[in-house]
Length: 95
Image (cartoon, rainbow, N blue to C red; front, top):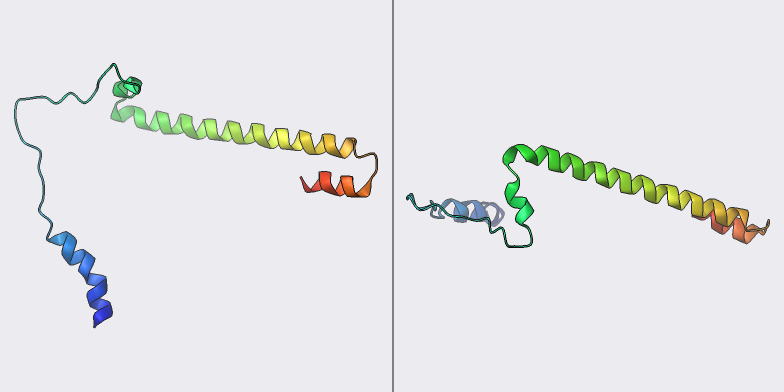
């Protein structure tokens, strides 16, 4: 019985919470301060959300490809300069 009560207690607690509503009035709230550091974000709308996320994912993929290419070049360079030494070749192959 204690297990069920322990599982239900967060749901009971949250269901008893009072709901909060914004005050309806004629005073507009300006949350965008154009003098701040992140003023560029004030120009975004809900329609731009997909564009921003798509650009962010594209940027992450480009960075990942560049890092992988640099890693491949670095490992190849270490393999070339190993001069046939088996420990250095194994070290270069493990990169």
